[in-house]
Image 1 (tube, rainbow, N blue to C red):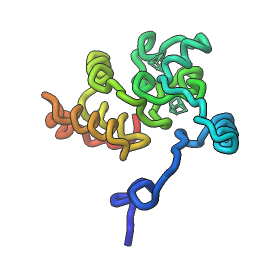
Image 2 (image 1 turned 120 degrees about the vertical axis):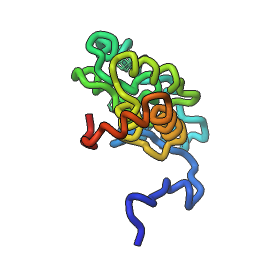
Image 3 (image 1 turned 90 degrees about the horizontal axis):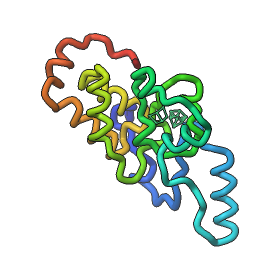
Image 4 (image 1 turned 135 degrees about the vertical axis):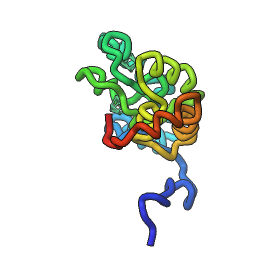
Length: 159
Ligand code: SF4
Ligand code: SF4
């Protein structure tokens, strides 16, 4: 019997023409995609990160101001940076941007006091199968201190 532990992306089983990000997806992005397909053109969807949307709406950065863990710098835009607008960090539900610089973000999160286990859990909150987030989680755990973090971490609840 298949379980969550061995679930895989649908693209691993059938050809996928296009992926819309988000949980849930953005209605405006869906309309843009359908319109583009009907018109035979490329959809105009953002290729930048959630951080740009924070700046566009004038949201104070929760990572800088409060040290709230946030995956916005490595997450695809499209939601309008809704979580930071409510004082929460981004959990990455739109998935990684192309060329996501997770190494730099991991260093920033560590400097903010997160352990390797904390950081790995953050990358695995959504889109755990996205290669960039999977690699970032494994790297965060394997860096110096990661093993010690795991040994002393008996709480698996989301942070
Ligand atoms: S709150 Fe998060 S998404 Fe917004 S600017 Fe700061 S790091 Fe980027
Ligand atoms: S988790 Fe990140 S990408 Fe998802 S809605 Fe919140 S801010 Fe947007």
